[in-house]
Structure formats: structure tokens, C-alpha cells
Image (cartoon, rainbow, N blue to C red; front, side, top):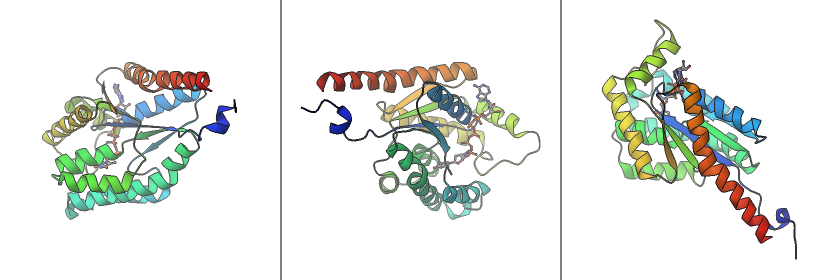
Length: 235
Ligand code: Z5A
């Protein structure tokens, strides 16, 4: 009998984590905390973002956030976000996961569901089909939805931007838009509780980082440790 599990088991895919939420919820801040904490544990982890995250997708990011695409409508916008996502998956996410790394991504397909889907009023069947051909098997293992009253998020984003600086395509939308966005994310979390964890983002950066770490420990690291234990016992 072969006692070396590496010769009998296929290589392990890495772990894919996405952070989602409205404007100024603290996603980029928490991506940095999380990757640093994973690396401190000796886990190989990369951070990335959407739209963008690969050279081709970064070109589309500039176009999408410039506001020039808005006039084409939500359907065209969703297709362009999807095109950027395909490049991002092919060149950044999939290779890292194949190498066994953790990938921590600032926004992913739930942003298309919330912004272009719910707020853009797109047909759910169209969105599901687009997501299927775009994402394929590269689905997140865990999605952290940072939940925050939009008034606080917009205030944080305005402070970061600085007085007088222009808003981007989505920052310029009104409060009702951002309130509807919050509801859309909570609906996604309620529909997929096995994948999504809602994190109260109204606390300090350190408290939010701890809540995220607790969710990861509970959902991924503990489960991973017991799976490895079972594999070793079964070997
Ligand atoms: N979009 C879409 O429509 N469809 C899609 O499929 C995808 C995206 C993928 C990308 O914008 C836009 O594209 C986005 C959705 C749309 N629309 N908007 N708006 P982006 O990448 O430029 O920005 P963003 O993703 O919206 O992130 P953000 O607004 O820049 O915020 P954030 O990443 O969530 O927050 P942050 O940068 O970490 O923090 C904001 C400020 O708050 C900063 O000064 C921090 O120091 C501060 N902060 C962070 N955490 C805290 C706490 N806990 N307390 C107090 N202050 C804090």
C-alpha cells in the first residue's frame, strides 16, 4: 500500500475568498489585513481586485469606471465586467489557485449580480447564463459581505477621496441607489448561506478584521485541519 498521500491524492486547489459590499465598506482595507494574516501563518496568499487584477482587465477597469459605458446600458456594462473577469480569472486567479495559493479578491461576480443585476434591472436568466460562462468552476469558497449603512460608507469614501475630487461612475449615484445595493447584497447572502458570511463593517478596522478571521477559521481553516487529519488517518 502506498503510504505517501501526495502520490495518491490529486494536487489541492488553493482557496478562493471574495470580499463584497457597498461603497466605502472597507473591502480594500480588509483584503490587506487578511492577506498579511494568512502570510504570517505561512500560507501563500495573493490579493487582487475587480474590475482589474490582470493587465487586460485593468484596461477595461479604466473604461468602466470612467462612466463612458453607462450610456450603453446595464446589459453592455455587465458584459464588459464579464470580459474583464474572464481575463482576470485566466491570468491571475486560476493560475494561483492551481498552484495551491489562497486568492483574496476585492469584489467578484456578486458585484455584477448586485450592481448590474438588481440595480440595473437585468433579467436574472441572462445574468445566470453570463455568470456560468464567465466564472465556470472558479467559484469562491467563501464570500465575506461587508455590511454597512450607506451613509457611513459614502462618508468614509468621501473622506478618503478628499474635498473636491471627482466621483467615479458608481460613487456619483444617490443614497437610494446605495441603500438598494445594501439590500441586494443581503439578499445574496441569505440565498447562499453556505458560501456567504455577512460581517458588520461598522466597527473599527481591527474589530472587522477579527470578525473576518473568525469566519475564515471557522469555515475554512478548522475544516481544512480536520480534513487533513481524516486523510492522514485514512492513509
Ligand atoms: N462594479 C460593478 O458595477 N460590477 C462589477 O461586476 C464589479 C464592480 C466587479 C469599483 O470601484 C466599482 O465597480 C464599484 C462597483 C463596480 N463601485 N463603486 N462605487 P472601486 O474598485 O474603485 O471601489 P470599491 O470597490 O467601491 O471600493 P471602495 O469604495 O474604494 O471602498 P472599500 O474598498 O470598500 O473601502 P476602503 O478603501 O477599504 O475604505 C474606504 C475608507 O474608509 C478608507 O479611507 C479607509 O481607511 C476607511 N476605513 C476602512 N475601514 C474602516 C473602518 N472599519 N472604520 C473606519 N474607517 C474605515
